[in-house]
Length: 215
Image (cartoon, rainbow, N blue to C red; front, top):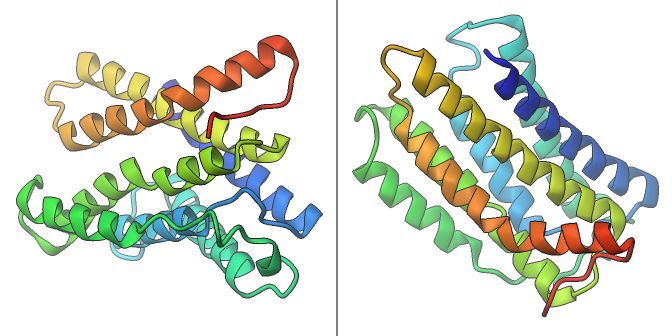
């Protein structure tokens, strides 16, 4: 644990709180990609298979439970809640996310740190998380206008990955044997996907105007 990883965990947690606040308070999931949320739920379920077998710390266990429970709760709201599910952008949220799932699984079978059941699924979750935001970004570009809470949600998700890059740099220089190159490279790819969004987010903040993405 270091300050950069902790900051990353907290910004990730804030992004989830912002999204749940938007859904609960407005009873709307407009502007939110169900496909991205389903991918995140799959990411956490496959990454934290060691939840009940390997104890690292209370903090680690609590964060795993929070991420799994919150991701499943968001998917439930968007799929089942009678008021919320009516507001989903089904016509815009059409990215074929199952291609991402299949491609990441094949890649995990080829590139992993150790060819065991849990390590393959850990690698799969890392690859999938790097691309899980793609359906959300596509939806926002198709819709053009981005409401404040949705913009904040995506911003904090991107900030979380930025802090984790600093975490990996810190660990590279402080650990005798740094071995998480899969997570590091995937994190760089994921952060790069946010570049366009961050540019327009900064422009809207600078001009004090509504966030708009080019269609």
